[in-house]
Image 1 (spheres, rainbow, N blue to C red):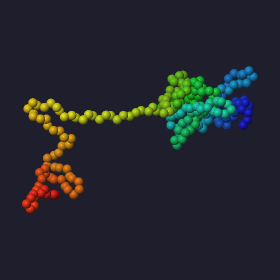
Image 2 (cartoon, rainbow, N blue to C red; image 1 turned 90 degrees about the vertical axis):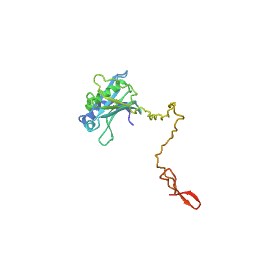
Image 3 (cartoon, rainbow, N blue to C red; image 1 turned 30 degrees about the vertical axis):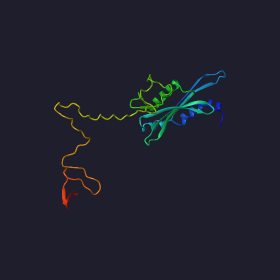
Image 4 (cartoon, one colour; image 1 turned 135 degrees about the vertical axis):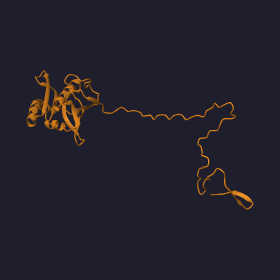
Length: 222
């Protein structure tokens, strides 16, 4: 690995080379004032290639924003915006290297992708983010107004509706009634009975048919 101090010192040359070899691309480099040694202090580096701008035209109008730490020699952070192409694959559209993740760097990043991707006021666009950092909560001047969505929806508990109460037998009867009628769980129709199991069959009449057999009388089995 080369000397990172020398490489960061030529970051403006790197920007010029990217724009020369990739016409139509966008690259923004920001540096702070000079330090005590007369060197510029790095702040942010943003890049969006022209090929990715053209690919965005064929993507779904839904983008995701996220950031992560780079655990290298330079402790900086990476901001990235991704979309989903026609093959349902993740497509990186633009990214930026920033000193730290805060409201200022996120606002700069969102404004750059708004101009490069032609988002306008964000009508019809869905933005997915974790909502954990200091991202702009309300659209201000120069920021797109979009529909925001969280990474994971809130869990909702679905409870089945309770069954209606069973009907109860009436308890008030006329004075002339000697006793209340008897209620059964199931009602039967006169002249029919349930079929039995096995070889035996139920009778078709509530009255049992009999036949004479010798001196006695036994039920007939049909």
